[in-house]
Amino acid sequence: MPRLIVFILTPQTVMLDVTGPLQAFHEARDPITGDRAYRTILASSHGGAIMTDTGIPLDTVPIADLDPDEIHTLIAAGSDETLNAIGDRHLIGWLEEHCKTIDRIGSVCIGAFILGASNMLDGRSCVTHWRWCQRLQDMFPHSRVAPDPIFVHDGPVWTSAGVTTGIDMAVAMIEQDLGREAALAVARSLIVYIRRPGGQSQFSLPFEHQANDSTGRFDALHGWMAKNLHTRLSVEDLAEKAHMSARNFSRSYKSATGLSPAKGVELMRLEAARTALEQTEKRISQIAGLCGFGDDERMRRCFIKHLGVAPSDYRDRFRRV
Image (cartoon, rainbow, N blue to C red; front, side):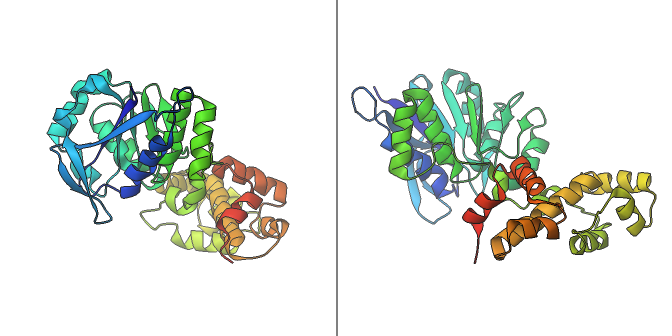
C-alpha cells in the first residue's frame, strides 16, 4: 500500500506550506513498480473547510477520524494563526497521545510551534522560518533551534524553515523512503535542487535580525559604523566613539545587542556586501575593500560561514540590476 501522508491544517494555513510538499509526494513513484508511492489526506482539529491565507479553502477530515497506526508521516503546516492554534487542546491532545505511534512527524515553517506545543521538540534540534527562530527557542527552551538550515531531522521529527523549504524536506523524506534516484526524479520534475545550496540565512537580514538593539542605545554608533566599514573598526575604535572604556563598551554592547562588537562589525560588513552585490555592478574585490574585508578571499570565507554560498553565487541569485 502507498504510504499515508497526513497534513495538519489550522485556520489561515499558508497554502504553499501544504501544496508544495503535497505535490512532491504526489510526483514520487515506487522505484520497483512505478506506482504512486504515497497517498495524502488533509486533516484538521474538527474537519471541514479550512480557509488558507490565500482565501482559498481546503477541505479536511477530523483528526479524530484518523487511525494513527496507518499514518506513515504527519506534517503540520504553518499558518498565519499558528500561535492561536497551539491553544487548541483537541488538536494538541491528539498529537500528544498518538505522536509516538506515527513513524515520522514533520512541520513546515511555523508549524514547528505545533510540534513544540505537543512536546515533540524537547531535546531535539529543529528549525523554523528565520524570523521566528528566537521565538521558537524562547517558547520551547528544551529544544535546540538551529536558525540556518533549510530543514532539520532529529530522529523521527523533521522541521523545515519557511514556505518553499517544505518541498526540500519532502524531497529528502522521499530519498529516505525510496532512495536517491526516486528523489532525484521528483526534483527534476519540480525543477528544484535535490540539495539546495546554502541555508536560509542567505534570505534573511543578518544584522537587523541578529543584532536587535531594542534600547536604541547604540543607534548613533551603528550609523557611524555603516559609514566607516572600510576602516579598521576595532573594539578600541568603537569604544572611543561611544565614549566608553573598551571593557565597559564590550560588556554593554553584548548586553544590548546579543553580539560581541567584533561579531556586530562582521555582520554589518556582511549586510553591506550583500546590498552591494544585489544593487551594484562593482567588482567583488572592490566590494570587499569598501566593506572592510580587506580582500575578496576574507569576504568569501565570511559569506560561506554565514550564508553557505560564495559572493559570486549570492550575486547570481539576488542581483536586482
